[in-house]
Length: 571
Ligand code: PEP
Ligand code: MG
Image (cartoon, rainbow, N blue to C red; front, side, top):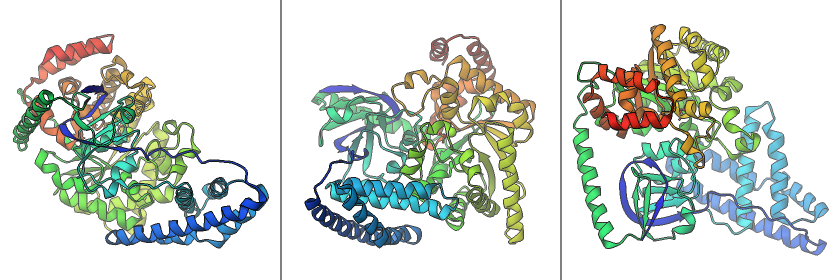
């Protein structure tokens, strides 16, 4: 028996068998010279790989018939590209002049083509660049004999062990078969972690060497809450954990019973508890956990699911289904936060050396105003179905907020011209995720109907800690005095301007933090739905005045360790 330690990402205990998923890394493409005699052999290999890739695409198209529409159109486009005579001609000319192996030639030709298209002002051509990258990768995989296993086709229960599953992999995997997730890399606020929590998959990330130490079909116990993975457990440990699984399920069922009660302290201070969602289907489940609305709908996952820019109708249908499922309760839709680790294609990473400081979130949307306006129109049209709020991510100053609001006004004008109705009560909120936004919160508050603090990013940018990097995650301490002061300053600015202060970062669902956040004056907590019952339980068992004293004391502690000790001893 061996115990592997990592970072606690998503609660829950699972006993099961391991499946290693090692295909998330792109292998290096070999490069070597070939003789003149070998060229025709290389071209034959290319022809065979093209044929195999085309057959694979036909099969994928057939299997995804029920998805219809856009997804099938993508396979059709890729089929055309795989056999494109111009692409084939360029490859032939190139190998006959450069005498290098065919994998390398395909890679080079595709790279040049995509780079040319990526800088085109035409969004259609930029999208084609994504397709070329995808198609060429498929051909290269066939040339190198790499069989890509699709996590979507998992047909047995497994504990998935990976190096670094991307958010797009997590989205597409067969979630009902992934019972737990263990990764070498990643941290609790990475987007893959957020998805694992949303799907209720117990997870431990940052387990150094997990893919080396664990082999396929090993028996594992994953304790998500403690950040522990037990490899080949002995009989006694197995029995003990079977008992823990039962206790965990019983406790959770009891907490679910709190569903209908308000999130109110013993002395009558009431706050709102809402849910964060990533995919529309999650909305159906939220009342079960006692959510009073959706505080954050991460709309970018709609785009990532298909790997493409979703059109207005697709978006409208998705937003409408979420709003309808909430039956009049508030739904806060965040405009897309693409970029960073949430990419529409691998091309976006290739373009930026510091993607977290690059063109992500509102910057990405403002750089593509037509795409932004399309999203805003879809939200506006859906807004008549319930109570909708719009929120802009990663605002770093007043100019960005004003520009976003003015594009929203343009979108409203377009809806009016098309005689499309929208609600006239839509609140517009600002996400507070950068220290710059906190420092200018008084100005931002004048132009916002509410604030929502995105602590995952705020902590990352304030403490200079990459939120996805397990090597520095020990520094991402939410009780750091700088973080507490930033939260306090945001809440105070919101209240001074008469608007509410919400939090939708992972910290809002962090149990020991709940009394402190209450004491700091937070009005709304938005979190992964399954965390709501436990947070509600804490809120209902504390006294607001005492929480205020706790906050005062915490704000006077010089170190995160002292604040943590204070919290541990407080409850
Ligand atoms: C945050 O940064 O805290 C947040 C809620 O947004 P995301 O995690 O999607 O970046
Ligand atoms: Mg964020």
